[in-house]
Length: 221
Image (cartoon, rainbow, N blue to C red; front, side, top):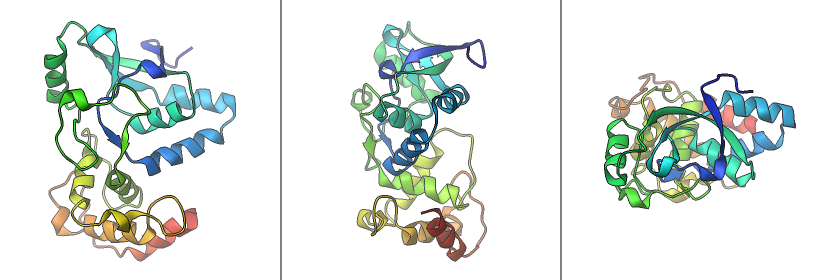
C-alpha cells in the first residue's frame, strides 16, 4: 500500500516528461544507487520518491519533477512507480494545456543548448531526454554548497544557463573516466558564490575557497 492514499501506481513507460533534458551524470549516480538496493529498499525508495504529476490530454500523466530519477528507473527497466496527481487538465486541448502548464511553472521546453523550443519537441517518454552537462554541473555545484536549494521549479536549469557561457563543454568532462571534472566543479562553485550570480535563486553570497570542495569531490570517487 502507498504511504498516502491519494497516490496511485502508474506504468513508468506511460508517464510523459515536461522537460527536454537531464544531467546524465546525475542519472548515472541514481542508477548506481538503485543497483545497490535490495528489493525491499527499492520499494521504500519508490514510496518516498513519488512522482508529482498533472493529468493531461487523453488522461495521461505528465510528471513535473523527478525527471532524473524517472530516466534512471527507465534505463533500469523498472515497470511502475507511485504518482500523486496535482491537477486534472485532461479536458484542455493540447496547445492550451502546455501553455497552462508553463504558466504554473510545470513545463520547461528548453533544449540541451538552453534554446527555447516548441512544446511538440518535448520527448513523449522518459528515457528519451537528452544530456545537458551544464545541468549536471549545476547539480554538483549545489551539492558542493555553491548555492542553496530553492523550492521554485527549474532553478537548476537557470544555474545551468548561467554556467553555459563560462565553461567550454570539453572542460566539464572528467579526464579519468565518467562524470564531471573536479576542477570545473571547483571553479563553478567559486563563480556561484561571486556577486556575478547574485540574481540567481539560492545564491549564498559566501566567498569560501573551492579547494575544500575539490578535496571532498576527490574523496567521493
